[in-house]
Length: 71
Image (cartoon, rainbow, N blue to C red; front, side, top):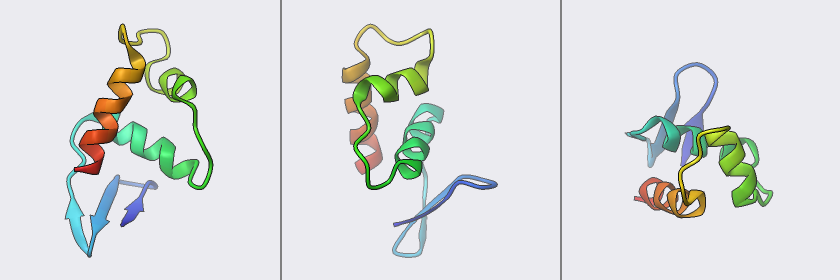
């Protein structure tokens, strides 16, 4: 997997461009790339992704986004 976060966001797998659809999924992937090799708590991710308007269950929303990214 290759990714570029400066300029247009791109992710590639086996040399082929992978579409990372929704904005919050792209933001989540960007945060995880910037923190590669370290554990990032769900609370920190929620703070970074939603600031003041977090969903009712941010942990469940994060789980959904991670599952979509893995696909």
